[in-house]
Image 1: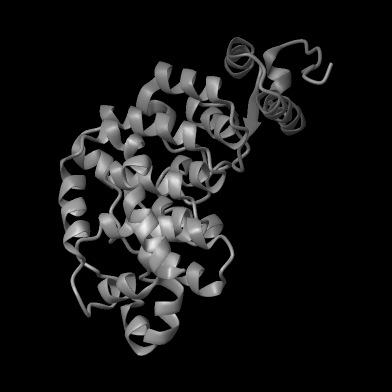
Image 2: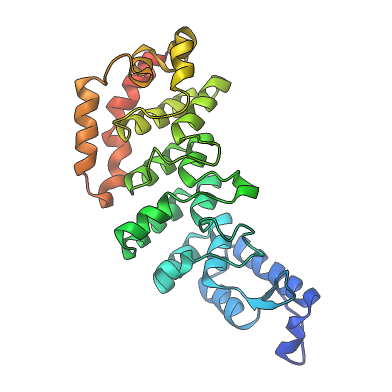
Length: 289
């Protein structure tokens, strides 16, 4: 049996480093193979330990199990953990799962990195149990320096060109002005991706359109580069988007109206935004083609 944890005389047998590694891997395999939720929870609460760097054997917390569900896109297990434990499933995991204990919990960045849009939407729904200040702090915190270079979820959504993740984050109070450890905003990350080549350009333009809608002030590091190289950037993002971002002209009345409208849309309707905003996506795509 691939998930056989072995026969031990007592639970103490699990607490050697070797047995912890064995049971941890069995749990990882079980989540990867999308076993039923009840099986996974029985394993997590009764049979499985993982080994910490300080020599302690620990049970898997809901937060750590949720990370596995994210990586393997086990949507039923993710939904169960969020429904059962609410924001507890988004707590900081132990150091063996996240070395930067001073950073934000890794669930948002993992969801974006693996493009788990459905589970990311579940997380956004769970955040209603946070206060406004807690939600804003959670959404705008920086990630692990060792794994993500300190980038937050919004930076990664732009760097990896994930428009579906980007609109969910923006619609749930992620700030487009937040800076990483190098002072880059999400717009800087996206413009760097656009500059690197024309592959996947349509999705890059969709991301650009979303950022513009949520950025009434064009405040980002690369604005000077746009102003110094107008010909290059007009060819990459289109003349009108270049005029807005470089500060040579304000957004059109259409875009200004859309920016105002965005501020009045309830967050629970954010998942309907992509279709609603297709006129802007189409226009930006036309300007850049």
